[in-house]
Length: 258
Image (spheres, rainbow, N blue to C red):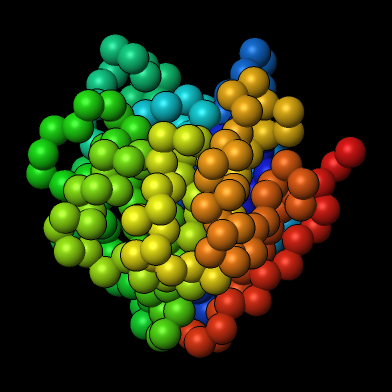
């Protein structure tokens, strides 16, 4: 079961397997005096009786993806922490590094070709970043293909057109029935050639209501509509849950707060 939490303009995705393993991909944003970890993610984990995380994935070091990480690391037992790209340092994220030291954890980088077995046939395969240096940390975002039976989900972080082209050039198997649209639907990603390679049946967009960036971009929405892809958005649908039996994804929403 995969739950895409409504954390506004940011990403937070909880993955649970049938054997009870739990993982978190990104931790949402932080703002003055509060963060998505404390406000949204922790209450959800408690509601699901999740007391530990087998893995925490930080796709890249932008604050709308890691702002809630300190709250999570302080209050939840985390076994491993994985990160995308190499633009991580203690100078820019002193609180995160201090808590990692306190918890005796380290950031383990992931790159293309690596995979993580979660048991019961669940595999996470890393498609990005590659070996080449990218122009921005967005292009170095972790892109993970979750595989279970015949079902696949593509989690794209904030990867843009440069990363997409690199994955296509590398011949990666991008096919997935379900895709998390990169960078909240930014116009700088989700290019037509990439989406055609993924060939999704449904797409999830994690995006804040009335955000100042104009996400999701009209061009991205037009591409998805032209491919007859069902679109779910946290700004309209609230938290979104996708479950699979290894063959078919079933998606449900809870409705956004108005």
